[in-house]
Amino acid sequence: MKLVIAAIKPFKLEEVREALTSIGVRGMMVTEIKGFGSQSGHTEIYRGAEYAVNFVPKMRLEIVVSDNLSDAVVETIRATAKTGKIGDGKIFVLDVQQAVRVRTGEINDDAL
Image (cartoon, rainbow, N blue to C red; front, side, top):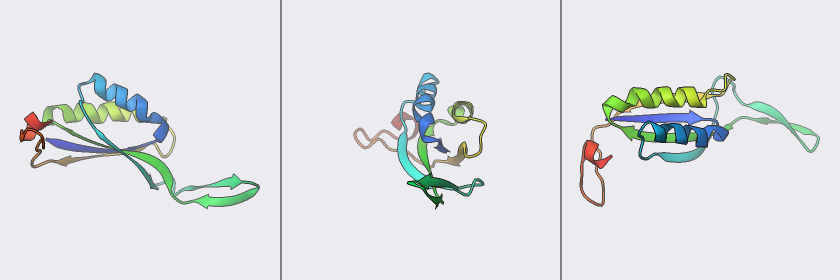
């Protein structure tokens, strides 16, 4: 099993969720986060005053999938979340040792 972690632009969340559902993803966890990467934040003007925004709002998706679906999940997120502009996000893939469904006790792929 793989854990796919993606940081994407907030306005892309619903489009990415729909695309992932269409390829067979049955669940995900979503968290509102702030961060910065190569864009290192930006400046904004609010009520006539300019100030630095050091952390940019993002959405963090966490998706655990079977090994054979992980490449499709990564490609789907990449293609759907892409705007072509700086700050589109990042995707990380990690190995998952075990998954357990709390209600039934099912483990690993059965728990997904």
